[in-house]
Image 1 (tube, rainbow over the protein chains, first blue to last red):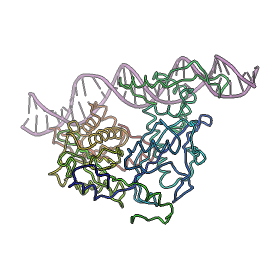
Image 2 (tube, each protein chain N blue to C red):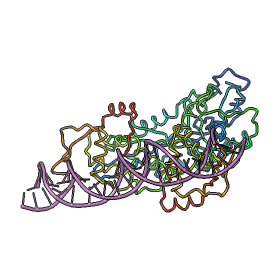
Image 3 (cartoon, rainbow over the protein chains, first blue to last red):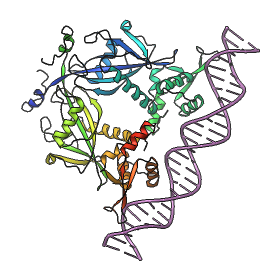
Image 4 (cartoon, chains in turn cyan, blue, yellow, green):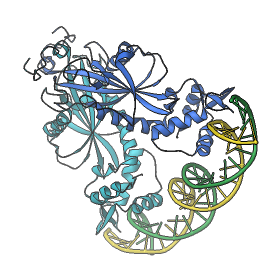
Length: 238
Length: 238
DNA sequence: GCAAAAGTGTTGTCAATACACCCATGA
DNA sequence: TCATGGGTGTATTGACAACACTTTTGC
């Protein structure tokens, strides 16, 4: 029991006498496919029994000497080759029998990435449309539902959506992204008015002509300006 | 290792070979003091080292054969004598060194109760104004801050506030509660208009004269009506 | 009769919605 | 020249905020 770091030896019976549990972190990875205009989730083939070979979120057990958030970042890096990604805790799932393999409590994190980032291990991973998900192992379908809900709630009040787009993006792309997140159509004129009035987007002179002959201007989210506005009491809302 | 319930013995190395961690649940207990018109939190004297005797949230380790939410309810029942309370998961706290006694990850829950409910063990527990909290052990102050924030967010969209009031309450009491939750003054005429227009409160003929000579009408939250409205797409918002 | 809290309506302002046409360009 | 997606402005509506006086009753 080498994790005994405290010198309160008498009452450490309190800690020693208690039952330890396997703790896992599972990650819901969202991506936005600009071409297909679809919000997607990255799923992996589970490697271990029970349910080996079935679709699953990516996850791992938390090490004894590892922060929870560090574990989440490690999973994304080691298993998907992702560094420096947006990552936020969702919820902890703790039913006794949620994993038939053993008692495991799992903390779900969700991350937002640009879908065209290079991923490693892609032979065992695949993007799925959020509206067309296969059955997943354990309670992972529930986690995905909860993550989608949280993403919707979050996108209203925080500029998290930009994590799903490349640095430069067009307003039609941004509109389509938000329509996918909210799963409902939005009026394009009102959407433009609102987002531009916030003064958070910097217009580059360049156009993206990949999806029209006229081409659409490329914009960039100005994070510095956002942080300044926040300090002054500004409230983002979309 | 008697928790081996699976028959996938080969790959259970995956589970057996991994490191187990102590898992705790800590509860933030909110109450509303109608007389003082203050939102309060119930704190306890910590019984074990390190930090024995200091103010703390109430908590306990999760047993191997116990759902997370069951553990939270057990804590409230065994340590505070509370049954059938509103309880919701907050967040999981998982820094390696958050507890000097051992590596412990803790899932925080918050609960809303009527402050005049009888509590057991009150010799070691005490209500504190949320605006005047003592230093707490470990990261419990952080938990309380997060819980307050979540309560605010939650109270906007869900009728959770009623859990803090007795079955029958007056509109001035409800107003004062919301002012405490949001920590800002609200216009009483607009507040009445809004809450009454939702058609969720049932007016009893009776008055509460404890705080004025004229007396204020007692109302009751109609949960059945609320559930019906929700099914029809109604959105609560205060 | 007065102090103290409960209850009640109207108006102005701003933000969200709904809606239809012209523009630029490549093929 | 035409088909395609990009870009723009206005009128209406509804929600929220601001605001002051009357009522009831115990003392």
